[in-house]
Image (cartoon, rainbow, N blue to C red):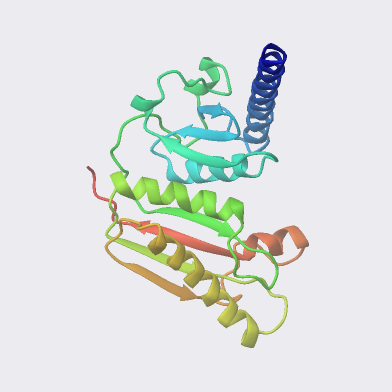
Length: 231
């Protein structure tokens, strides 16, 4: 009986390992496809461990946050992390090396110097909601990691709403969204000298409110990272 039990245990462990490897391979394929759909495959390097994705850091904050959100949206992904290039030497880009060399405009690889210009991280919200979804948290987690090596003198957080309903509702909702982002960053101990949160109601649309897709883009918070000194 002990021999039989041992064989059964080995079969179960082997089956679980095979299932985990298949899951990891499947997520790798679908993760790269998600990055490609978002126009982020070239120049983006990601590695998988089970259901956890790790992005290799680059100095384009907007690109990193969008890539994190794309991976977080892949069904089955558990965690999206960010690693320093030196800690991810074995990671491979989703696109061939030739494509990675011509990354999307604004993308750079390696290094820790922050550009002097302000950068913006955008997170979006469901209708009538100030709750952070999985993609929003993934974007903000990247920002938190960024700030650990690129200390910002200030974060300006602006909350926005679409034009659905009246400003008597949209104004407090836009502020609630900004506060939700501010509180999340503080809970993650974001390394920022000052964090200001403001609600702009529906007065500053990113795009005209002429379709459902456009209104979804206007239900947002923009985090402007100002005065990032070079480290």
